[in-house]
Image 1 (cartoon, rainbow, N blue to C red):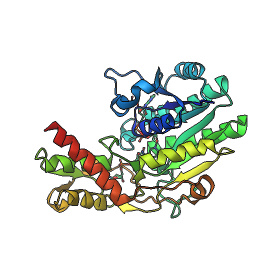
Image 2 (cartoon, rainbow, N blue to C red):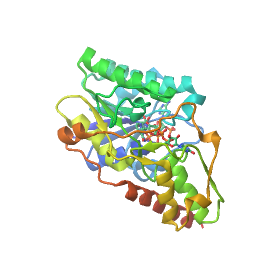
Image 3 (cartoon, rainbow, N blue to C red):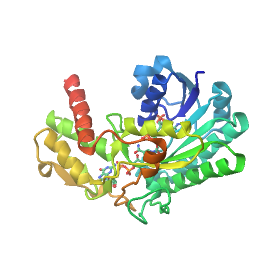
Image 4 (tube, protein in one colour):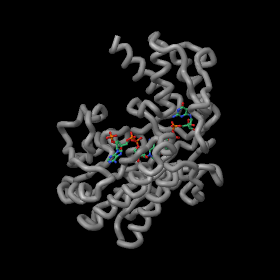
Length: 322
Ligand code: NAP
Ligand code: F7E
């Protein structure tokens, strides 16, 4: 029987890859989109005729109730969020409203309208923040370091609370950073690959960055959405860390990206205090053995290939523009 899925955040990086995956699996795919003055559908242009878009906003309970009533989903993937950590200091209340209470609103909409629906919560390695042990796994205590991380901890516990209070199928995917050519331009990896492509095309002179020594466990978004799907196919709902198990610094990423166009990053990169954060997460590295053992999930794309993939896409984009 055809399954129906509702994806919040379908216009984002993960939403678009997940929609592709679910279409391949023959799902009937619905995506929640919020009203914007200029619609932002770049990531889903190629599939927009094969999915249904429903209007709604994580700030608005009634729109979420209506969306669930309309779609009658078997699975809901709650990916919508104010997802940029730096912005969460500028807009802490909005970040809490969308990322914390927004998740609660989706859970409530499911509880009231389609309680047997399976729920995926986009939890984050940012919840580990100032890490209490390395590598981080499902039992590592949280120590969030930003309004974003704090909001995600709330949503994480709301997900578990609905599982335990109402016997709903609610899973947390604790995903470490994952990137792709569809990554938003303000995140460090895409900011770097876009800038290097522009420098290579003679459109930009230098690249201003913040903390080059921060280290992250970077994977490929296309691999990570497979883990989301696997979590909702499992017999029972649970929480899983999704990561590669390798940490690399921003400096290493920059170095590799410039090497792709035969340049030395030290000739172009300037450190600008504007891009430092009030409280930094210096190091993240995940242990995803639980997902590997129970879900049979593993990442396919290696760090070096991820840099190459993103560089290639941005170089081609500027070549097409020329
Ligand atoms: P993204 O590209 O920033 O996409 C965010 C999505 O949320 C967009 O579709 C956006 O819609 C939507 N959205 C924002 N505010 C909304 C609201 N009030 N109501 C409805 N929709 C709203 O994020 P992503 O990288 O795909 O990440 C997906 C999820 O995973 C997020 O929850 C993020 O916090 C979490 N996460 C990401 C990572 C990562 O490394 N990528 C790691 C761990 C967890 P518009 O297009 O209208 O802006
Ligand atoms: O920063 C440092 C910055 O903004 C990574 C989100 O998807 O992953 C993402 O959050 C690191 C930080 O991602 C610049 O200080 C240096 O240490 O790419 P980012 P993030 O904050 O790790 C988690 C798992 C999520 O859940 C989030 O939604 O890079 N950095 N210089 C910089 N970062 C940016 N953005 N810009 C710089 O110029």
